[in-house]
Image (tube, rainbow, N blue to C red; front, top):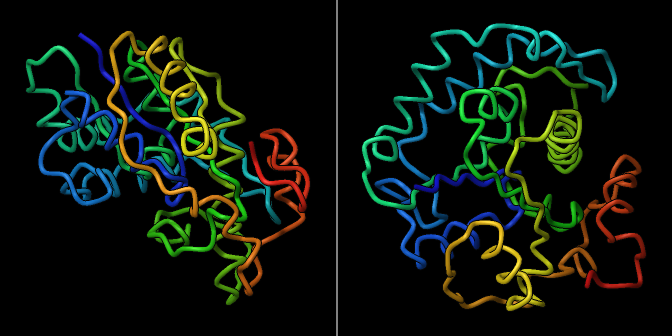
Length: 245
C-alpha cells in the first residue's frame, strides 16, 4: 500500500499533482474541491493553530521551530489530523493520499506521525505563486506572528517565505521528492517518469497550460522581493530574462 501527500504553498500548482494522482487511480480522500483538496478542512486548520503554539517568531522574517521539533506531539494535534484524514485512513485501496496546502504549515509533525509515506514537495517560482490570493496569505489566521503590514502582496510574500523556510529547515522524510511546477508543465513526460519511479505506480497525463509559467513578467503589482533570492537561485529561477526550464 502506498500513501502520498503533497507539500507546497497555496498557488504553487499542487492541484496539478492532486489531479494527476486522482486520474491515476490514487484515492485522494472524499469529498474533494476543484483544487483537489480534501474537505472539510477545518480540523486541518485547527491542527495548524496547535502547531503554531510551538513556533517562536524572532523578529523581522525569522522564525525558530526548535520547540516544535523537541516537543512531544500533542494528542489534540493527532486527533485533529486523524479526524481530517478519516476517509483516507479508512480506505482499503492499494494507493491513497491527500492534498491541502495547509499540510505545509504542519510539515514537521506530519513527517513524525507518518514517517513511511511518500512526500512530494511542489515548487513554483515565488513571483508567480504570490500573484493569486490564498487562505494562508495572512499567517496570523493560523497563529504565526510576522511583521505587521497592510501591503497585501508583501503579506503573501512573507507567508511564502515562512513556508519555504520551514520546509528547508526540517529534516526530510525517508521518501521525498522535489518537483517544480514549471517542469511538470513544460516537460511533463520527463517529470512524470521521475514521479513514477519515485511512487512505483504508473501516472496519467493531464492537460496543462503553459500560460501559467512566468505570469509575473506581465504582472503590474509588486511580485519580486529581496528575500525571494535564495529560493530563486536554488530552484533555477535566477534570471529575470530567462524563463524557468
